[in-house]
Image (cartoon, rainbow, N blue to C red; front, top):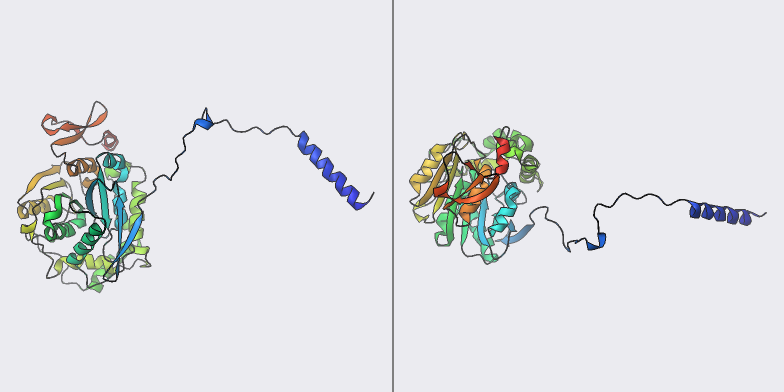
Length: 357
């Protein structure tokens, strides 16, 4: 028998053995009728798309989340955050979409993909926001500011008062108000301030950790917060450089830091945690003194500096023009109830927050 004959015989034997093998058992189907399964023609949401414009030769990065016909809302995240900070509120995405709210956030100088320019200040950031809004054909808009975002909210609201429909301040700093306390660290140089902050920028977990906060019951929230800090301090090659963060700390010391609060005419809503040590209730009082149009100022007992997330459902309702209603958990159901009908002992917010009590 030749080598070719042996090879052919072996191949024929292998084919016969394969044909004789019993059919392999497959896993049981998870759906009863595969052909009736509806499969989306697109992709599921995994995060906001980052867009880029150029203003005076400078790149401007922003996100735009929501129906183009919805109510536009400018989101201003806290100190040292990137535009990804908005994602930390998306545990209420379904409610936001139901209320028809379109969230727009513009990255600040030196954070995330935005290159750092030490010459830029509050007015420049307001101009960038308005440039993005004009590009998107947005005229009127609401503002919601968290923590350090309050410094920028005052300037934006004063720059374009005729376009601001409402102002929502959640534990928002008062550092740019005429009623503010004396700003801190103004005796430090930019380099000295950066040296004090670099431990945080080198370790995003230290910057964004919120131990013992009720928000930790939201699945994935803490991991997303770490991701925001990583974007802020690393994504554009910063390698943890703290200069941009130091500049933000020292910006209230500038000659043009104080906004013209008399120009702020939009109705304002304030949300504070009674136990907030980072931005204490005294700063809420400074907002109340500076603004002549505060519709509601609420201090939430037992809550700290993450009150903005704990009460985010209420903030969304207020932005949507439902300020006469309160989000409560009643009969194991989360609902909007006329505020006059809310009892003293009623549980405020989504029923899911009860797990943090």
